[in-house]
Length: 546
Image 1: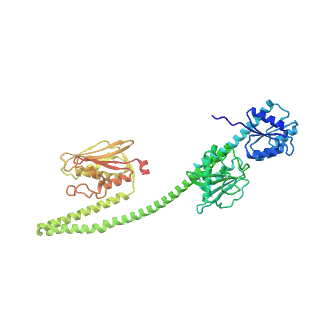
Image 2: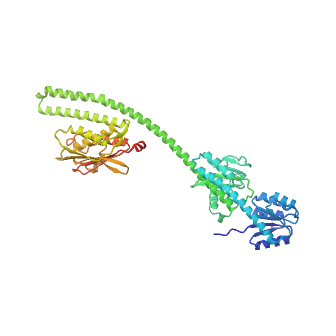
């Protein structure tokens, strides 16, 4: 740990031998001293250098000790002051203390009597500086905490000015920000008793601004190398601003924080410089956060507008779909029914007299019309299942599967199919829509096991964490897994119409219903060895989120 620098003492006494002896003695005690016999020379030195304590004689020509004390305190309010007097009266002590002296010593004095007085005065000064730093740190902390509250840009300006006004020596504070429409800086806000309206906008050449920013950031990042950050005092802005700090975050320039007036235009304590740097960086972070929040709000507004537009488009599309469904149901189905009816009448009345090639053509017409009618029915089902609202409730799945299997068995006639039911926990779903899922999956299982001597179908469930995954497995013809991506598309088939009838819409209905419940459906298979279809139905909370 590096040692603290030795205290710097400014010693003033019009008797040169006494002043020199005092400086030499205190230097031997570890202090850094500079002595003057003229009060005016001492004030000039204080303007150029930093001192911790003024030790001055009370009775001097030109300017006495109390007047010198007041003048020095104007230059540096943090300077500790001790007066030396040979007039040990209460009135003298009171006058010195009123002028701002921490203590006084009587002349002549011994070294062991002045050293405790110096130590007390420096300790008081240290406490005062700590109090200033604490006040400055609290204001910076309040600004930093405000960053997390999602402030608007104007609120960040207000809080930054409030935090800056608590810094030591801040008589007036200004905040300049770039004008988005022209290459100038405009006054965003000002505060403090010495506040004066700056000319707005402040015109600064771009090259001069970039050069100043680079120098100021370089000096702030390494103050030990660059001294007291002279760029902060030699800025290109309004002359009434004594010290200016750049507000930069992530390479983005947000503005300038200016202080005026400054009691010491060419110097600044390291701690004070660090506090101002932290304040500027905190303000930059706040402005960056406000900019991000503003951009996020703008994007959200655009997104909401797009959602509204998309919702309106979907509502229009749904109305068009309903109109299309009505048209399909009435305008297309009626002609097909007429074709089917006339084909049936023609076969009944004239079938015997029609040659065999003609009867085959007539059969193909009747079969095509029947298939087209089935496609229309499936398309209407797909549309209805996609638009109907969900009415979810607890569903006893085992009971529902048994009902579906019983209905499907009635269509088999003499054909035998073994159906095994495993554990089937209840689920939360729309019962009618879930029934359609089971009908479609089990119908496919019955259909694609038609060529098996010992057809087997298994319905069960698996546990995946806290959720249940249900499956329908068969030992039918299966399918090529390379074509699995087509399974759940509308009118997609993996087998020929001659081998297995159907329109290819059943699995797309399954996928649409499960997706509306917030679940998913998938399948695996080995061609010639059967297939397994899985589907999941999340609980109420997950469905609400979906």
